[in-house]
Length: 268
Length: 264
Image (tube, rainbow over all chains, first blue to last red; front, side, top):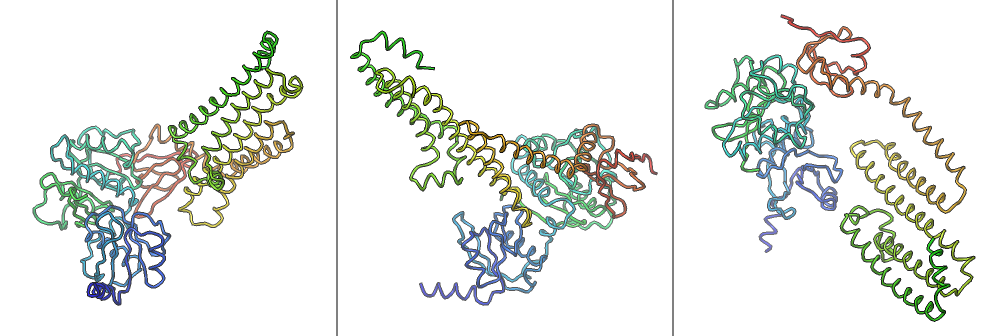
């Protein structure tokens, strides 16, 4: 077994920082004595100084690591050339995995930026993303549906769009994350047009036809009109857009006219 | 009380029969007490009180004496049932100076029980409130804020002690005056401190119910013109050219609001 132990020693030799995913208090304390530990998890249970909040339970380790690195670099916890050892949980059985990665291994995708530096509150974005992922998994009555949510900067978005029909959310005060809302949004997802959600999570309107200027929007070719509209509205306003594709079932997020996040609902 | 029932019964029975009856009552009392003890444990488990008291100081103290909150409460119930049986039996056979002594005990017993329960419930409630407030304030990284949970906890302890003392007939007038002064202080300070928030909240309720303007409307409040981005219960956010005005809702009422239609 010495060979394996040696290999592990080599793996973690000279790292600049340790990323701890789903930490326990004792583990955190013993590690933080000798290394620069960054905690990446949904809650800061251990009161770590360097902490990156994980807004989603990324099942894929690569996505989790990518998010953690982008967050840590953004917050200045590590240099963007740093060598990082990641200690994570993959098989639901406590910390069971160690990987080594360079911080500049990934192209900056802006996924951390999407959550942390958007107008809307991170919890609102997370709630919307959760609704969309669930919608993508189950569809509407078993059939795949498409949907477009524009989150944040609602006043401006409303001024750059027009109603396709009566707004079902008029005079209502529902917020994403309210318990009944998932069902409601699922029912309304058969309507055409976009959902508009404010910074604080209030569902302002459904049935909106977005009318942004589409010039200069750079999104991958092959995506449909819904994605184009999403990309364009985020270029024109400071909102972000989350799209569920009807044709391939993927969830994509746009910010400033660019695709920043692409995930498969089936993996969550 | 039950003693009135016993009196004619005693007169009607011979001494031997009374003695046998008393023994029977004592034995039945043991079973009844046991049944009550079991039943309390069961009730605790069913209503989920078990989890509620989990981890409170009272529970931990009880555990140090090799029992639990459930055990203490069940024991109290059982003891009172058995005490009642003993009382009844003694009364039947006239062992002691029953007429003078026992009625007083019979009167005091329920009061003491209630007092003890008030203390137990107060201790648990205080602890729970402490935890709850602490949890809510966890995100507020302010050392001064840690006084609040303790304040809540001891306030509840104080009220529980007051109820218990009043129950067993100790003069508590001075303590109640103190409590009144304390409550008055809190209400007064609260009213002064929260005056603006209350005004904003009241105005906010009106705005939320009637929606004179909604997100996306262009409005002017006090020379500030822009697009409404968010209306919540306390403030309205209006944005114009990258400047976001956060306007307390009572301003909307005091100075009115101009909705701008057809700016084109």
